[in-house]
Structures are given as C-alpha cells and as structure tokens.
Image (cartoon, rainbow, N blue to C red; front, side, top):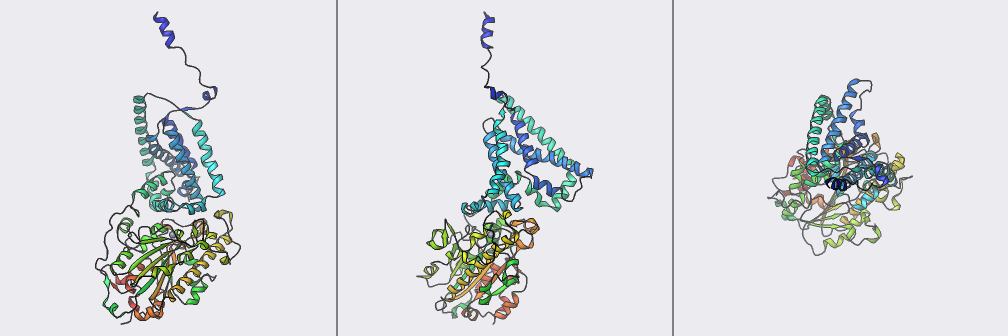
Length: 559
Ligand SMILES: [Zn+2]
C-alpha cells in the first residue's frame, strides 16, 4: 500500500524542453561574479591603460599589482551587484547596468572623459536635443558589441531555485567571503594602489561601472536648482552708492555667459586666425589671461556668479548661497535671465527666466535648437513699461560640442572644410578646428549685435556689456576632445577663456572709468573669481560681500 503511494509521488516530472537542457544553470552568486568579471575585464580598458601607464610587463611587481587589482575590482563590483540579485531582479537589473555601462564606455573612449560627479551632472542636465548630437553611428556598433552580446549571454543563462532560507544564508556567506577576499587583495597591493591614487586620483573615475553608479548617486543627492528651498543670504546690506543720486538715466547692463569658447582660438587673444573681426572693429576691452572656475558648465556658471569662486571652492556652499543676481536685486536692479543653453544652474532661482526655444524666433530655430541671435529677438520688449536699472543675462549655446556645425548659420561657414557630424572621430583635426572656429565667428557676430542693441538704447539708458565664456574645450590635443576633465589635471585649453567688456561712452563718463587704465588691467592674469566683485564694483553697489581686491575696475575709477 505505502509502496504504491511512494511510487505515485516520486513519479518523474515531465522533461524540460530540449533547448532548456543546454542553457547553463547558475546561482545568483555565480552570475554576480560573472557579471563583475565582465565589467572589470572588458569594460575597463581605459582604467587598465591609465593604471599601468609607465609600468613594464617584464617587472614581476606589475603582474602582482595587476592580479591584486583584478581581484579587488571584481570583489568590489560583486559586492555592489550581489545584494540586488534575485531570481526576479537579476536579469532586468543586469541588463540595465550592461546597457548603461556600454553608453558610459562609449562616451569615455570617444572623448577621453572621466565620469566624476560633475561630468554625470552635466550629462543629466544635457537636454535630449543635445544628447541627440551624441547618438551617432559609431555608438550603434559600440553598443551592439558591448551591450548586445553580453545581453544575449545573460538571457540564455538559467537561474537556480533555492528555498528562501538557504538562499539567504548562502548569499550572506558569499558576501562575507567576497568582502574578506577583497580586503585582502587591497591590503596586498595597498602601497602601489595608494601611490597611484595619490598621483592620479582621477583614475578612480575610470573604474566602470562603479564610477557612474557612484557619480550618479552623488549628482542626484547634491543640491540642484529645484532642491534648494532657501538660499543663504549674501550682501544683505547691498545698496547703490551715494554717487548714484547724480545719475539721471537708468543703467542697462548686459552680461553674456558664453559656452565652450576657449582663449586659444579667440582672435583678440592673438590666435593666428581672426575669429573675432567684429569685436576688434568695435574696440572692446579684451582680457587676455582669464582662468575659468571649472571645466564644465555645471561648475563654472554657479561659480562665476558667486562671491566664493575658485579660490575657496566649495560646491555645496556655492549652490546653497544666493548669487550676484540676488545682490543686484537688493540694490534695486531688475534682473532677467534669457537662456539658449540648459538653464541657469540655480543662479537665477526666483528670477524671471526666458527660454528662447519657447519664444517666437522661427527663422532662428529648428527642432527646438536655436542660434544664439534668438537671444536678442524681441529683447526690446523687455524694456517696455520699465523705468529702473536693468541687468539682463544672456546664456549662449555658443560652441557647445560635439555638434559645432549646428551652432552657426551657413553664412558663417568661412573656414573650410568643416566637420558636419557629431562623430568627431570621423573628421580630421583640421575639419574639427575649422568648424569650431566658425562657431566663434558667429559668437563674434552675436556679441556685435548685442552691442548694437545697447548702442541703440543710449538715449534712455547708460549701457555696458560683459562677455565671459564658462570653460574651454579640447580639440584633439593629446587625444582629448570636449571638456570636463577634473580641474587639477585639465589641460590649459579647457581652463583659459575669453572675457570682453564693452562700455558706452556715457557709462565710462557716468561711472568715472578710465578706459586706458582698464585696457592695461586687461593684460593681467584674472579669473572667474573677479566677475562677481567687478560687476558690483563697476556699478557702484556697496556691500560688505564685495572684496575690493577682486574688483577689476577699482584702480581705474577716477575721483
Ligand atoms: Zn559649458
């Protein structure tokens, strides 16, 4: 009787389909380990190259270091991935990670960038119309190879089923074991590793995908535009100096924030090509030695509007503090931000911000991408029904890469041949530089139109303009493209930027500025740190937050 029953329940289950028998069966731990080995060995070519630069393969120490680093990195990635692996989450999660990693390695290898929090913040802030510039054919083949193949392998694998209690126990033991081995591996190569990190701290941002997982978490957690509820007040005592009582006309000040224009290609800074013919004609005051605060928009824009600057750089403090614009408002200026870029990065929080792609400028915009002259379209209307002092910021798209060819109308295609694709690798250096220089020609033209506008308002306003670029750009020097290299190791071309001032004669007279003195001043080394203090100084706004030693106009003011 019992024998019969036993026979019934041990009846074999129906055989699995034939093709399932041939699919490898793995535990979650083995899958986490396999994925980590794939990441470390296949997706970290740049890290390995940087970590072993200058080491000899004949040296046994190199092999020892390589082995220790390999174990440590596989261990770290396994520890990152394994806690999230279950029968239900493993495949979707690893799929996302594999695809994101393939995007990251494409970006890193194409442009030699480091995925630190600043870079990730940039990528996150880059709007879809700009990301479209990056979606090119080279990327498709890179993705097929680096994401397509591993995805096929991942989805072919079958995952073992274990009772929950056993699975949890096994997972815990696995994590403890991995942690122990990782710590031991780090200890073994500690001396080498610490000297690598001391001398080339930035290589840790080449370790993929740990770099973008870490950087994305940092970028999302740090305060951005919307997240800051109340900002630390600065210049609470700001007011117009007594000399203002003698002025009959209000001031109209235009500040143009440039994008990705580097000093090395700026005609007025002595570049072999005249890329700034119109500004030269206008006789603007050109500052020829200007250091940017950062090497990307997300760093430089908040920094140049802050009282803190690069000398005491503290990103959190800058993002939590009020900007130059708040101080100007306190002194009675109306402030308007017009944007043809990716927004004001929190600088204009609480102010009117006009996005040009939402303004009517049909002939200057296509598919939501506008030439910078759209910033001037209808700017007259901002002056209507106003009588007081006005400070307008124009935030250009400038020379934003890699689609330099999209930044200027065809009339400015003067240096040829050009690189009419975002895929810079498909172009020669000459083509890339030509295209970049054409975009500067257009900025030159745009700034000249801005001066025309100011000149046309001189009957009602006392007018002036300040132009400064946010950071520079690499155009293939040392194999680097674009920008965003960590500041400490960034090449000069990413850190030296043009800066220009234009004053109406009425402004020079009214504010007692000595133009010849300013021109002399303009050849001295200055930086974004001077912007905040010089704008307040030139406009004779008094406040305790103004540091006179950083005010470029101070020694050139008469009387
Ligand atoms: Zn920028």
